[in-house]
Length: 114
Image (cartoon, rainbow, N blue to C red; front, top):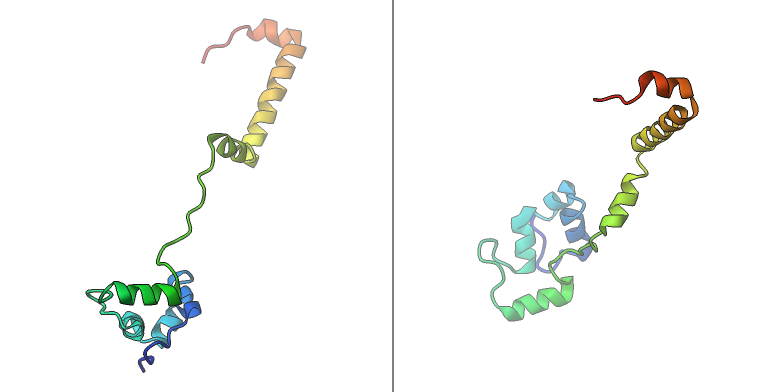
C-alpha cells in the first residue's frame, strides 16, 4: 500500500532518516512512496522553488545540526580521563619517587640508556 499524498509526518521522516527504522520505511512504501507522498520525483527532486518552499515550511530544512568543534585543550583533558593513561601516569610518578628516595637504586643503576 502506498501512502496518500501528504500523509508522511515529520516524526516518520525522522524515524526513517535518523533512527534508520526499516519498518516505517516499508510502511510508507519505501523511498518511492515517501517521494510520492511529498509530491517529489525520485530522480529529479522538487519541481521548483515554490514546491521547495512549501516542503521546507511543512517539514523544515534538509540539513543536520553541526556540533561546535572542541578546542585542543578540551580534547587533551578528555584523554587524561582514560583509565589506562591514569594508571601509566601514577606508575611513572611512583617510579620517579622511588628512584629519588632509594639511594642504592640510583647508585646501582645510574644512568640507564634505552
